[in-house]
Image (cartoon, rainbow, N blue to C red; front, side, top):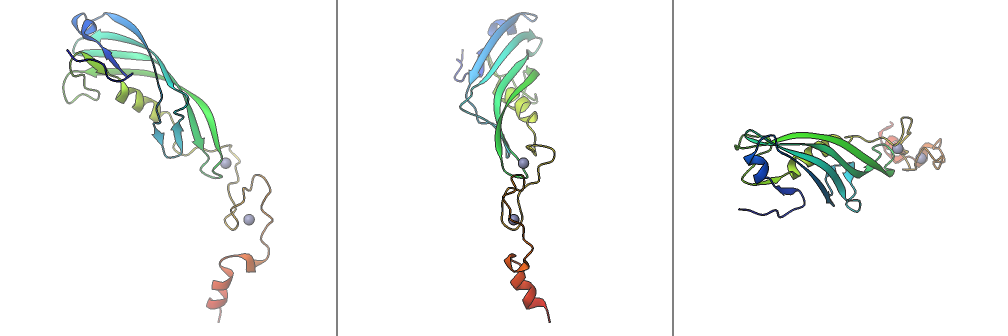
Length: 167
Ligand SMILES: [Zn+2]
Ligand SMILES: [Zn+2]
């Protein structure tokens, strides 16, 4: 019999023997999953309250996953932390064709939990609806008024190019 080697793994031999049998599990683990501009904060462990239920041909897992995400605004690059809470409902099944294969008596919940959480993260986080982003000329955050304005075209990197092009 194999043994769990990660906080996401649970022995489910009892549930597999008796479909309908249920067990409550809780897991806590630091992770840094995410997509480019939204990632989970590894210093705030992901936590999940789960219900594992024996089913014919596998184990059904439901529950709630909580973590803290760090988002980066795609316009102004400000970062901020935000709690994430998602519901999970996935089946771990026998067979290699299963979305979440269950091999033997140990269920590895990491792929199912990771997919559920990452799908809930925004692909293009925006710090606020009216974020004005960064100035294309000087890079200043336009939300703070730090850009002095650029009426004088000679300060533009394209000014010299224009002189060359003009007859
Ligand atoms: Zn922003
Ligand atoms: Zn500027």
